[in-house]
Image (cartoon, rainbow, N blue to C red; front, top):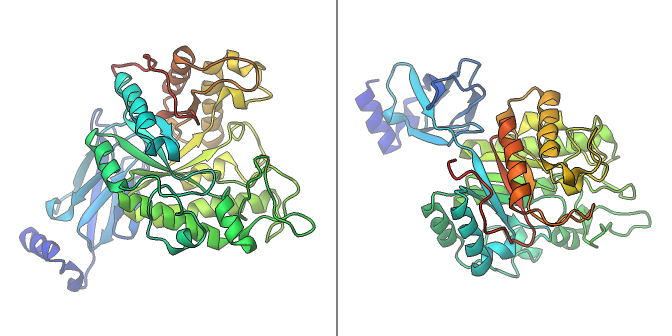
Length: 418
C-alpha cells in the first residue's frame, strides 16, 4: 500500500476494511538531549506498548493516530498519515508539572480561582489540580452518568460551564489534572449501603469526619470511578489523579471480603490497574496519591498501599510529603516541620530506592498550609521554596502544592526561570 493511498484511506475512515494490520516501528527520544526515553507509553487504538531501554517500540493497528506519553514529558499525538514507511523517530518535549490545587469550591469561586491564577503567574506555574469528585462525593459540574444523578452527586452544580472554564485555562497553556476521591464517598455509600463499609452490629462505618466510605473490594465502585475518570479525559483534562485510593485507617470496618495485607493490596492495586487499562487508549496520564509514610513502610500501612506494586500500575505516584503529616518524623528528623527539605528529599529517595523506578515516576504533594501537628506555624514562601528544591534536586517530574482553603502566598517561591 502506497503512503498516498494509505493517507486517503485513513482520512476516509476506511483503513479498517483492508483486513491487514499495519505495523509501526520507531524510537522515542528526548527533544532536548536526544537521549532515548525508556518506558514511554505508545498507543495505537486499543493497543499499548512501552518503549525499551533504547526508546524503541513496535506495534500494529489500524487507527488514525499514534499517541505517546511519558512522565516528565508533554504528551504527543501524531496522525498515521504523517508517518513514513521507514523507522519512525518521535521526539518528546520535557515537561515538569508545577501545580496548585483547587477544591470544588475553589475552582468554582472566581475570587479564589483568580487569586490562585495570579500566584501561578507570579511564580510561572503551569498546572492546576482541580476536584472532579471531592472529599464529600460531590461532582461540581454536569456529567453524563446516571448513577451520579441517582445518588445526589449532581444536586449542586457549582460550575455551570465546565468546558468553557477548561478552555479558559487551556488558553493559558495550563496542564489540567482531575482529582478523583475514590473510596471515601459519603454520597455513594449513603445511596448504596450494600456497597458501603460496615461495622459490627450492621451499621455503616463512619470516619473521624463522620463520613461514610465504600468498599474497595466492590467492582461496582471501581466502575463508577473509572467512568468518571474517562469523562474527565473526554472533557479535556490531561491527567486523572486518584486520591483516597485506599482503605480507611480503621480496624473496625467490615468488608465484602476478608481484609488483610495481601487482599487490601490486591484490591487497591487491582483498581488502579483496571483504571489504567481503561484510560490508556485515551492517552491520559494516570496518577495515584499515597500516604507520606508508604515509601518508608514495608507493610501496606494497613490501608492497602504498597509503594512497589502501585508504582508498577500507574504513570506517576504522588506521595503526600507534607511535613505536618509525619507525626513520628523520619530517621534522624523527629521534628519534620523544622526540616522540610530533608522530609521531601529523603522520602522521595526512599521511594526510588524501594522501587528501582526513575525519579520522574514520582511527583510529590507539598505543604502550603499551616502546620497543625508541631506548632510550627505557617508554610509560606521560604518553606515552600525548600520543598521545591528538594523535589527538583531529587529529579521528580514536578510538584504540587496543597492548601484545602485554596489560599496561597502572593510572593515568589518558585524559580521564575523554570
